[in-house]
Amino acid sequence: MSSAAQHYAILSKRSIVNTFRQPISIIPALTFPLMFLAINSAALNEAINLPGFPPVDSYLQFMIATTIIQGALFGSIAAGGDMARDIEGGFFDRLYLAPISRSSVLVGRVAGAWTVSFLQAWLFFGVAHIFGLSVEGGFAGMLAVSGIASIVGAGLGAISMSFALRTGSAEAVQGSFPALFAFLFLSSAFFPRELMSGWFGDAASLNPLSHLIESARHQVIYGWSVGEFMQGLAIAVGVLVLGLVLSGIALRARLAERA
Amino acid sequence: MMGEPTRYPVVAESLVRRFGKLEAVAGIDLQIGAGEIFGFLGPNGAGKSTTVRMLTTLLRPTDGRGLVAGYDVVREADAVRRSIGVALQDAAIDPLMTGRELIKLQATLHGIGTASTRKKGDELLERVGLTAAADRRVGTYSGGMRRRLDLALALIHTPIVLFLDEPTTGLDPNSRQAIWDELRALNAEGTTVFLTTQYMEEADQLAGRIAIIDNGRIVADGTPRELKARVGDPTLQVTLPEGVDRLEAEQVLLRFGEPLPVDEGNVAVRLSQGPAAVPSVIRALDEAGMVVEALELHNPTLDDVFQAATGRRLEGADHADIQVS
Image (cartoon, rainbow over all chains, first blue to last red; front, side, top):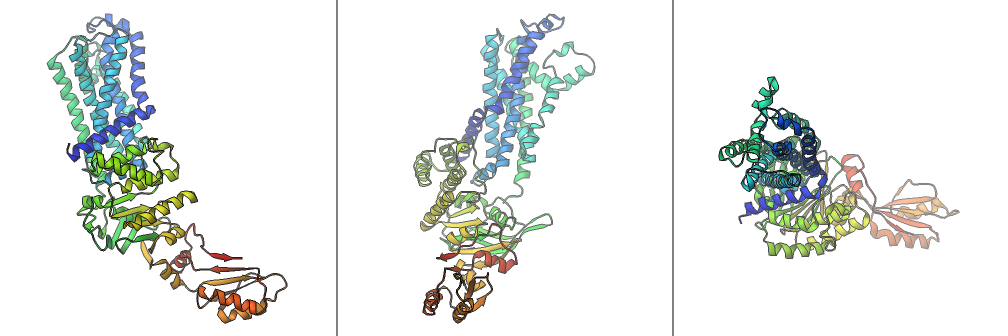
């Protein structure tokens, strides 16, 4: 393995291991989506009988894709928070005192966010299966959903890290949490767009998150579809590219004062 | 790991760093010889850490030039990083990782192979007394243990120059002594040490040469002995028991230097021939039949040097006097 690959690998490993060593930072990303899943599945199950609602056997089946993407969204805050704490505590400086490439720290953390989102998706699938979830797309469908979620998780993690690199403050990163919530609620995360009307429906149609969730949802409700997967993948990769660009610019700005 | 051997591993030429209108470092010149322990002494905010950050590539100089291990800190930053070990203020260590994991991380980032890392890591952990705690998370370490781990991390790639930014601030005397012992041992092995401190005693105990920085400028530099000699001669204070004639004692002391005003019941003299005159003073007092309660020799301290250079006392100054009772 080249030295750059070794740097990426060990920094990714640190990022993943540390995530699980401070459960408080990942508990919200695990519990909130499951809580929403439990409450909505219980309260909105009758909604599946509405005309125009997708052909699901339970609201759980409709909601699981949202839960997985929601987990990736919330997990991204933890990734940015960890980066900010490295900056606040001086560990960021320690890493840059070694002869490593400037992108190593960022790539390591993004890879860590990717892995955590991927594992989180399978955990959510596992929990939902206990409560009777069936995935029409089978293993390939679940792999597609977890793959898309992990790429989005990495991308949003990178965006969160750009906040951390700009501000150097974990509190500032946490402050972006309400924006993610608003983004989520103004989408088809909890209700199909077909049943929305007026400005809310328009906003949901403009929100890329709607299309991302619908792409993942298709694998669960209708079965494996290359076209739907490619649509979700394109949006996820777009988020990742945006995140990498923003965090790269923020990293460059932070390191500009250095030799 | 090692860069080219050089006679002066740390050189600063008119090094300047400004933050907006504030000139934190105002054009300093340094030349630190191979194998030296160089003490950079000054109060908080004097410019010590800013200088270290420039010399360790963490901060770009506004003007001037820095060379470390023969490499330019701006143009050859990677080569500088390969040649230096750095322990920054407050031991910036990830509290979620274990000591051994941090050693492995640091070694990997410096391109050291797995087998070498294990051997060197075990040696370093043993050396800093952390073998038993190596697999515990750093969050459970005491302040002294963190500093010792920080030192081990800085040494994993066998650096030519070790930069230590206030390595013992806030530590208890035992932990401070442990760090001092380790620095002396490292220096004896040939490592050049650049040590910033606000403790005069630390600089006095460890450094072969000292520069005192204040408001971004070096106000005095030299060996501790040279610096103190510039301030003046030591003073001897004699405490007399009740009933002893003070004037008579002053007459005896007058033969050894200029008398100094002191509290009632004491007499003092600035020894013009230095500390070597103390036995003669004791003999003279004895021959004059004088009984004394205590003798105190006050050598000039680095705080006196700082005061002579700046007109102010150094924060946290404590005197290193010899007392004979």
